[in-house]
Image (cartoon, rainbow, N blue to C red; front, side):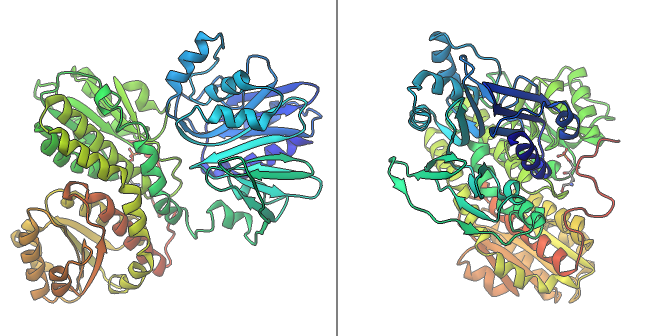
Length: 585
Ligand code: AGP
């Protein structure tokens, strides 16, 4: 029965994180069951309908909180079309308005629901043509599967979201990830960007973006279920590091265009900003201080949530931004409550829609990085950085402290960031080799200046967390005030030096370190011969405006931490003593 196959497949995808579950089965009409919550609680409630065709979904909320109404599948007003979707429909508000004016009744807060009503609008008996017509109206990204009751086939399409067809014997399956079909077949057909397909029990037809037929043979899969969960990567952390180009893209989706429209924060009178967070999120906040002061010329302070919550306060009410990828960190939640008690307007930057923090603040910015399984934060950090740039641009635009040319330049560079990050990922094997110089160290110093001082704090934290090597992030100008005494040939230094106004000073600091015989691993702009000449090894990153350099540098630092921990045989995804979300004080 289709329902059992769907539930098995959805269970295999549970590791990716979700907040609701749903299935639709073609069985004497369309039958739908969906709800918020865990699979183990929902599965026993789902009737075992007799149908042979169906679609199912586990949702990770992005637009609209986790709820039964917002869970997929969605059904049109006639009750004949059902649809599931991964991705984000950027122009959903505009489409929803038009469809409501035409008489369509919406039942959810999601962006996805416009797709099923668009299908209803265009439906003429050909589900594939109808889906293509509906998708021609949308801006955004999708992997979508839809079925019309009585049709005997499912229609699918993809743009910027993965989609795979499992080829079985007398049955075929569609999924967003090969893991979901592994128990049933080891032959799959990957749907490529812009393609669509019609899938029935005994046939698969694939079409390119223009609607012409595509001939593609199935690929045999040799992965185990466990391999596939990690998409072929050895660890979730590595998979998540590699997901950063897509995560950054999703984080930026729509936001740059809407920056002037108040999408990030509304028009409010801001005279100072306070950024509050813990751990890695605190480092994103520290980068945020440089960004906001530079772009918006606003006095900005940064505080650890665990300190802020017990601090006396000054009677002032800065605009208070709380960064927490999980949205559940106890100290950050307490800080949010304290900020509101003090009368401050609050904004949360979080990755989890519907998380506790989103209900405790005045405004929310979702980073849309997708679920992160590895305990060490990677893609949730770089997307927090993106949030800081968007916030800085918004505040700068509001206060007219940056001109349009600069906004345009930074926006273009931000749009190119997924490509720059891919450029860093291409250097992974060089990084894997070079970390030999760090693996046996007992202590390592991470040095940076200006906006890359917090970048290096984050690099050091990443290394500590997963390799258990003592690593200390330091502002390079502070070296001479104490830590220089610790440096010798057994203490390597990782130093960031980009093309900003502190470059000469940083080169000087690196020379001081090298003079104490510390092996130096430099990270700088590719082709920087001066840096290469004074370091023992150098990793180059693409040239970006210095204010954006924390993003590519961070990806190098994540890979350094990862490969050191791997060479040491550490438990990378679940480091000892640490939890993904720290819900206790
Ligand atoms: C990150 O790698 C750490 N696991 C940890 O420092 C984390 O950033 C911190 O606990 C804050 O978490 P949050 O972003 O969910 O609030």
